[in-house]
Image (cartoon, rainbow, N blue to C red; front, top):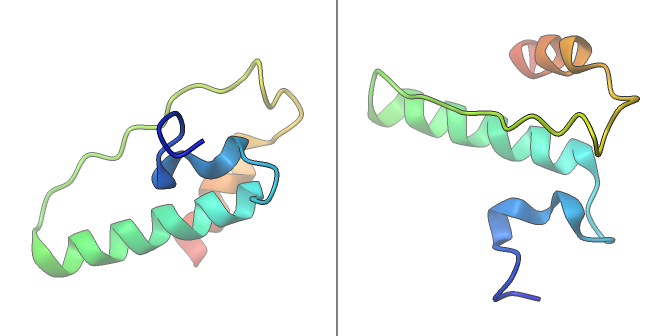
Length: 65
């Protein structure tokens, strides 16, 4: 599976949860703030996969963490 799904794309693996990805994004954001001033984090639309996820709530949660 390592050749198909990289370690930073682990949401689709059975052993991982969506919250793991939120923590990873927050760690990347914090690390980026320490190293450089500007960064672009792009979120790919996963609406078909996660229709029931409230993305606004997730966004608020990530910024509060």
